[in-house]
Length: 325
Picture (cartoon, rainbow, N blue to C red):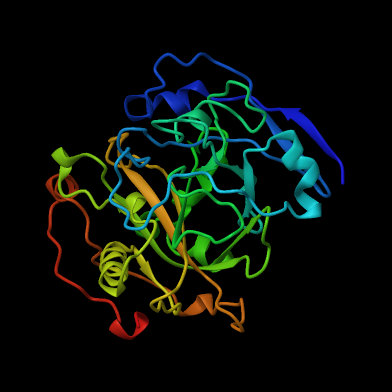
């Protein structure tokens, strides 16, 4: 397997739109070099938006059972060894079939305070880059022994170049409809240690705030392990209330989640986020989804500032309770 590097033009304007929360105001214009896997050759370019004081989880996150010690990892699978040697922070590969989302995922654990900050401004090759890289939340090390109950991955919304997590906002159904979901109802995420059951079925997408001054903040990014059923269901109910679309995909206690987070500013607030959630295919379950069963939620739960700008209010829980078991 051969790997090569390609230089892709970064967009300072796209990143500076999120400078307030990303603490990237001092970043200069760079030309990010992204990895390209040449079987087939797919350019990995792009951008994302996460902040180390709000979007990415702050020190002292409220996870129960979370362990920040770095365990001894399992052996890297042969197909990932060459790329892992290029960057030993690589923990997996994320792919949305037929889209630009086809990238390695890294995780920076070499920090005492905030490992989520490094790959905001560095590419896969650890070179300074306004586009950054896709990275897994550092509070829950991915080591091959087990995956977190909720694996959170951040990426910049490089809307001007159409790269990194810019495609995710196409799942915002109130504006873009259901085409993105109909085309891609599943996500593939393999770790470098484990590629079994790598399919995740998308079941929700949320437009949320991260600033308390805009209303209640649902800290989805801090919910990485669930200590008991109550914690699990509280998380799922909050997600379902806010989801802008509903699907046939059910959720049951014990499921593992994949959460993809990027910045989104339809109201002009660079601190807002669009979040896509999926659950891992269960043992013995078919990885396919009947996407045609999806429909737009006419009344998702938003936040105070949204209703202040757009008007209206939430009418209450309206999703099929049989979807959560």
